[in-house]
Amino acid sequence: MLFARRTSWDLTTNRYTDALEAHRRAGRGMLDLTASNPTTVGLQYDEEELLRALANPEALRYEPQPKGLLSAREAVAAYYAERGAQISPDDLILTTSTSEAYSFVFRLLCDPGDALLVPTPSYPLFDFLAGIQDVKLFPYELVYDHGWQIDVVSLFGAVDGTEAASARCRAILAVHPNNPTGSYLQPRELQLLNDVCAENDSAIIADEVFLDYALAAQPPLTCAANNDALTFTLSGLSKISALPQMKVAWIAVSGPPALKRDALARLEVIADTYLSMNAPVQLAVPTMLEQRHSIQRQLMARIRANLQELDLQLAAQQLCHRLDVEGGWYATLRVPVTSSDEDFAIALLQQRDVLVQPGHFYDFTADGHLVLSLITLSDVFRAGLARLLEYVATLSR
Image (cartoon, rainbow, N blue to C red; front, side):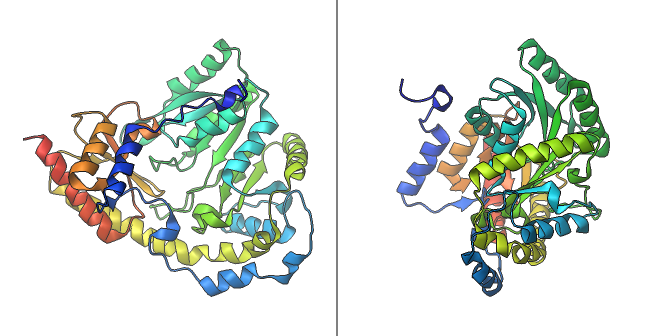
């Protein structure tokens, strides 16, 4: 075969995608409750200021800095300082996306066949990122009991699984807050991960892209301040400033001084090999980070309004309820199990013109879970939710 085995994906479309494409070809309207692109949900950007920042004449001078331009890294360090974490610009590596950041860290830590522990449920991107890097994934479960939490037995079972498979456990991936559960890593859980890493000579990879979207008044702590284990904290402007098209992300490295120093030196070589960041965007990072204040106010108002609407409509019926959410852009809805989640989502689309994401996309271990986007336009969210609950009511008749 001409192509590498790592690219032997099943490229046939699934039934859900087929149904969505058929719906679009038919020209039918749709209430989309899966909106994840912040540039299409009615946010008001300071367009003039953003475009002015991208037109900086300094961008015409080539200044290759593997870690990224100092002015951009200083702006990111200032962002963490506002969150109470003192991060040196020298401890930051800029990348074009969190996906690229994952790639850098995977290449730093893992030889082919090494293992990473990943939470489930969680975002499905990790399977592809790990596969491209020839890394094995071993899941550990998040369980729901008056809120989401790490299943300690599952975590230790995943560690044992890597040993049984003769795969070195190189890192534990934590999504803080998790997508789609919206649950933050608690201090006791971070300490648990630190202990496991110390025992197994592993690192922590903390994905914090949704960190700023907390529903509680007290902001959560960032893992970028964690020094008990070698920690790679990933984030970027895609979510922080709702600018996914600008392609700015970073890795913040923390941990025991000797390990951190060695990791940064090796990461710098990896980054220098690609030099993927472009000058106009790097020069605009301070402005784009400043824009987060206005954007996050708008998004948090939307999230809270939609969550309130969700609770209001759920209170008027007894068949569905939502799971607790602490932050992020999504809510998980529990519905009666009358079919698979995929069958439910397809039927809802075909019969009510409402699009939701089935829970199995995120590796929920049981059916009866739907994922809704809380950044959806509020009128669309209200109408789509009403149709969804009406459809559920028909299933019990």
